Image 1 (cartoon, rainbow, N blue to C red):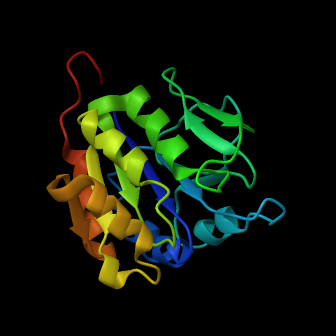
Image 2 (spheres, helix red, strand yellow):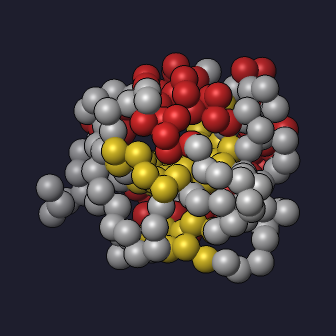
Image 3 (cartoon, rainbow, N blue to C red):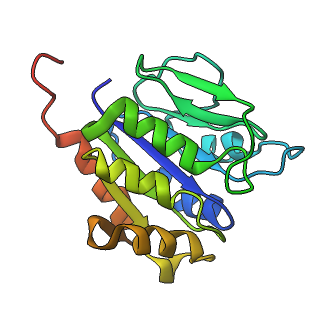
Length: 195
C-alpha cells in the first residue's frame, strides 16, 4: 500500500466525518483508518452511518485485517487500533491512553512508524488533546499533518492542541477543503518500484 490516511476525533468528529467522507474524490484509493472516542460499552454506529454516505467499503476494524484500497476502517470501542509495518491492522487492550481506548495517539504513532512519509494524519473536532502527540510523530516522520479549522469544529480543543504542538507544520482546513487536500494524495507519484 503506497499511502495511508489516519483520522482521529472525539466530540463532534462524527458530524465532521459525515461531511468529509462523502466529499472525498473517487480517485483516492488510500485506505483510511479512523479512531473516534467511544464509551467502552457503547455500540459502534459509526460504520453504518458512514456506509450511508459513501460507496467506499466501511468496516469496524478487525485484528490482523489487511489494509485494502478504497476502504475505511473504524476502531472498535474499548480497543486501541494500530497499523503494522506489514500493512495490516492490530487491536490491543493495553491500558487507556489520554483516558481513551481507542487512543488517537496510539493509532497515529503506529501509522507514523509503519508508513513514514506516506502517512497523512488528520485531527478533527474533540474536547481533549489526544492525537496531538501522534500528529507530531507523523510530521516528524515526514508525513502530512492536517487539522480541521478549530472555528469550524464543535469542540475545538483537539485541533487547537494539534496546532499548538506542531506550530506551522500542520495545515488547517475547512472540511470541504480537507476533502480536496486528501484527494490530492491520489495524484502523488508512487514510490519507485511500486505500482
